[in-house]
Image (cartoon, rainbow over all chains, first blue to last red):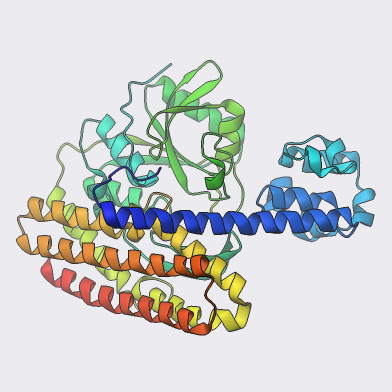
Amino acid sequence: MLDEEGNYTTARSAGWEVKTLAINESIRLIEERVADTKRRVLSGELSPIAYYMELNRMDVPLLASYVGIHRFFVKRHFNPKRFRKLSARTLARYAKVFEIKPEQLTSFNPADAE
Amino acid sequence: MKIDFQHKQSAHCENGVISNLVAHHGVSISEPMAFGIGSGLFFTYLPFIQVNFAPGFSYRPMPGAIFNRMARRLGVKVKHMRFSDPRQAEAVLEEKLRQGIPVGLQVGVFNLTYFPDDYRFHFNAHNLVVYGKEGDEYLISDPVMDYTTRLSREELEKVRFAKGALAPRGHLYYIERMPNQIALGAAIRKGIRQTCNDMLAPVPIVGVRAMRWVAKNIRKWPKKIGIKKTNHYLGQLIRMQEEIGTGGGGFRFIYAAFLAEAAEVLGNPELKTRSAEMTEIGDAWRDFALNISRIYKNRKVGDEIYDELADQLWRLSEREKAFFKRLKATL
């Protein structure tokens, strides 16, 4: 899709396959992470914030800069016990970054997440 | 409002934006030419920066560098602006569009709605041109797409203020003034000289020495961080090399095209030979990527393959070292 000159036919097709393999590999890794996090959220080990972070292909520093909360606290919010104490305002901030409703965070149901 | 803007697809976003913007002002600079004059060929290894859960590899200089250097060397005056306030960022954009000036933007890729899902990751150094606004939608010329697209106000704000490494902070640029006369030959020479100096730089994180550093680390990774992570790192290396508009082989093929063009402009047939050599080096990079992908395919295990890859990269660094010394002497 990105390259338009098809004149290096043999090399080009090899390159395409290589590229696809690399992309598939990294997509597979992401999916693995998401599935793993989902399991840990459902088992009560992590809060839904962790799941939505993975789903959006983010890491902690990135999420922290999007919500404008220090990464130390973002990490703390992964703890389900602390997560339950979060104010509606804080939840709304997370929800806005993930483009979901705050209720999707509080009553976690992975089925309605894409 | 809509500016009459010629959209042309290109292999790489930054060169594409440059050559499209300059073409709008009536000067035709091909994509390889823009790339070469801006000294686009590069290699850097930044083990202390994490991008997509892997260290930073890049086959190009900092975003914006190619553009800035090319503009400086050709005498094109470019105005750059960054913003802390999204509203102001939009106001300036609108004002420029009203004045009939197409505007280049640095954006994050993740929220570009017209990208396929596989390409949506948090990468903030993409470039596109806004050439108009209709209703609440901006008209977008994204050089990696073969057609023009649109983004709503909210979507555009989101991508302009993406966060993370290399955050664009609303980065906007446009051409203020074009030179009366363009000294192409001198610009080409400067571009080539800088590329040679960059690639041969005596610091470990850029050029051939960075390649050597990566080669050394490839040997260590399997033991240090495990096979799975190593494969992911190597995958990231290929992705940087083969996609996101590199034209393949980590820009080596685009550079070969540039050298061929430069040979014509400067009337230096020796550069033609250099161009052919560069193409061969590009092929060698492709082989390297192919060998990495075999790890995924065959699921071969064992440290020998990583050693082989490291050797291959090491040989590439030796080859490029010799090449850039020769290229410098050719000038």
